[in-house]
Image 1: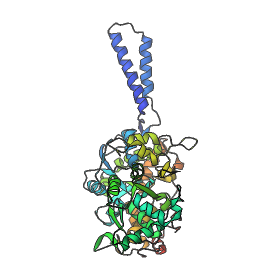
Image 2 (image 1 turned 90 degrees about the vertical axis):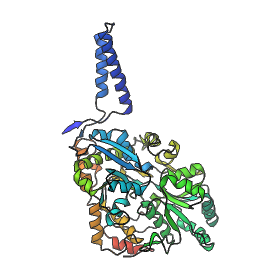
Image 3 (image 1 turned 60 degrees about the vertical axis):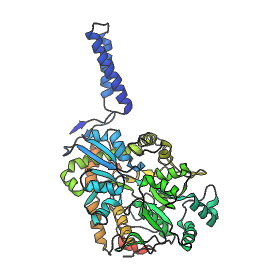
Image 4 (image 1 turned 180 degrees about the vertical axis):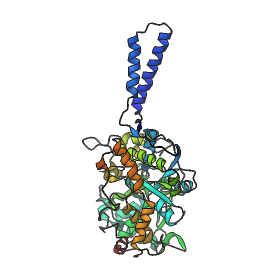
Length: 484
């Protein structure tokens, strides 16, 4: 049943306020016997009616089990789907009263979802998987919606960048060729090791895409990032570098202090290093693996069982927000990214300067002052079926957990597929998306025709092909890491 209308834009809300004010004023004037024609009152009433007219098609309102929700996020630009679903009234359209709340770090966020303090959250794509397989926090967490593709970068300190330039003549150019391989970092790491010093990388969480992308980038150049073992939860066994956890907003300050030499993080914290003049991004995750999964919306399996219609309603609102974020005009220019950046800059959301957020989110990326490149797909929220929870994305993350020892024992291919089906829930996504198709918010063509697995591709920095249907064969094709 179609009963809810799309919330008006801020401009429409303003028009509504003016129109209703005029209408009320008209009523007061009439009641006070002050001269006011009936035509004027009718005009005000008409203006109010126009302002209330829907700005888009109605949505199907589901019989939600819980209408007041608290959702968590970390201060990164890719929290945008939750923020925009809130600010644009998409949650309201679903009959949901939603609070979106910043969390201190990824562990606190996950623990609060598992403990029931949060109904759901903006999560690292690896968090529901890691929790479900029992690495770190152990709980059955699921996702029915991906929030974005790409969005991360690897930044080195100015001191390290100068050493990389000294070791590789190509990097001395104002516009060095991209992607920059970690091979350029090898002489710097060797220098540190010869001096008895650790080369320290910051990354955001052990099961983060940042951890696996950083490890992939290093290993592709023959640099061993280290194994997780029963006796080494830090993941540095046999490693040539040290990777440690730092919360995303703290990355620039920790780099500037010299506690770490480089980091892998999402935006806007790479661009913050550029603007502050303390570091140089050397690679984006889209150069390491093009259109890789990044964040998801996660809830516990128990919460989903208790609130299935509420879950579908939340996913509907998120899909609409992602669609709005990626909407472009006929020339391919983003229609709403600048507005999104202004919203995200607010202190209750990302809380970074508009210019820092816009530096990567509006279609470009700055590696250094002389090297600003067009990257319209640095952040993808809706294109390329970005919101769909593909099993093959889950399987890739599982292979990396096994590759580096977070999964301590070899597993058959069937285990990878069964685990992906426990964690990634496309059937929930389909119910949400089908509802949006029926109400005219999505076209049927916006949904992928898939069994959950993307075609095999070699969109990696080392050219290795990945087929999610064959995880063991994929592990065996990689030069460094566990092979089975």
